[in-house]
Length: 276
Image 1: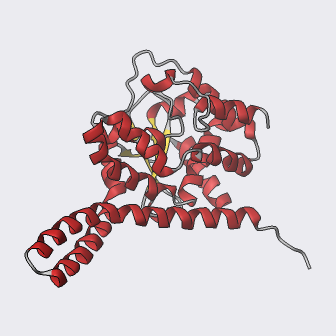
Image 2: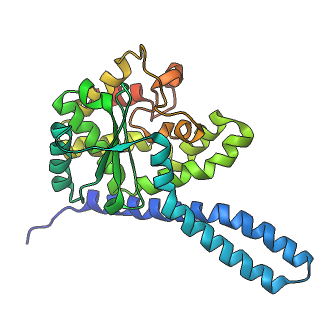
């Protein structure tokens, strides 16, 4: 009898389940806060049973709303537009091949108009996911480099990182409004999980069987000059809060940060993959 080692596959399934559960818990926060406030008022008015019912209903409704609308809200804030195979055949062909290898449904592909090479993925689940790339990604990377970046984003889709990402952005919005966008950005990083980009790199390298490809892509992103390019690719607080959802979170004015202790720093990840 031939034994098949499913260690990696089981780890991916566990990560997907954990991310989905974490996203559901985050979805409960906005409705729970509103329901609690309404419940307190009703308790003061002497209606404890009504208060309990309102708390449950408002929390559930808020969670359902957050779960269903968060990915689309973030996607809309980025100004992404659908991409067609005739426009970017190399990109679409690579996605088709990688999805077949990974056993994934093909995600929708959307493009953000920006010269900065970057990519992210959003969606409630793998079946409704959208892979977002900047217009500069296809131009800046070689075939092998592009395959590595796309594999990285498809790993996020398979792990259900995509719904957690979108929900984290909306949950962090009030905090960013009160404490400032930089604090909100850091909150999103903590909610989606520090080190998740580094982890996706490792898995993507195994999928394409060529760690140097994605390492080279990250190196290209680090070295790509931002002469006239603006980042984030869209105005507004929502777009700014997506920083840690991109494959290169160090793009733009934040690229002067020191990499020590940050596994998601693009420079650290490029150096690590160069050692493989």
